[in-house]
Amino acid sequence: MPIYTKTGDKGSTSLANMERVSKASPRLQAYGTADELNAWVGLLRAQCAKSKATQHSSSPEKDIDTMLYWIQNRLFNAGAILSLAQGEWLKNEDVRQLEQWIDVMQAQLPPLRCFILPAGNETICTAHICRTVTRRLERLVVELIDTKTATTQEDTLLQFVNRLSDYFFTLARYSAFLVEESDVPWKAES
Image (cartoon, rainbow, N blue to C red; front, side, top):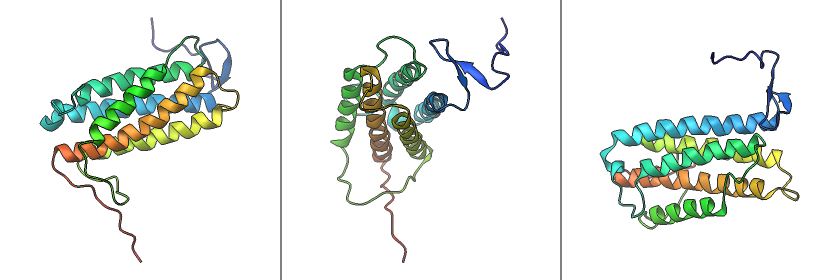
């Protein structure tokens, strides 16, 4: 069976509920961004695999690759929610898992006393790119969802994406910590 279907040649596509929508619709922008983020996370995993410091991190729960693999699977679940697939794709436990990982990494980091630049080695910078793409995804989800009438899945999705950006910020700092790099502080130029 060929990969191409030709059904999108006129600029529309089908959602999981079989509704046809424009490929420029806010819904497709959102789940396309979730897909883009997933690709960035894949690159981050590849970079972490090269770094001995992150292969067996001091996280008592899981190493970084295992966390990122888990996140990639949840990002596919986020895409399912955004494409209107029926089911319970994300759970409150997923949000709590991110919070736990953030707390474990944060406990090992020096206190943050200033704004920092997204700088450092490739792994650190890619974690920051993941953070910024996650923030864009969050903005798109907020635009798409009426928070007053959100379904439980939409509400959980919004919480998950919000925590995920915090996770990537913390992971960037933690990755620097593991290789004994300092945060790069922002300096206001006058």
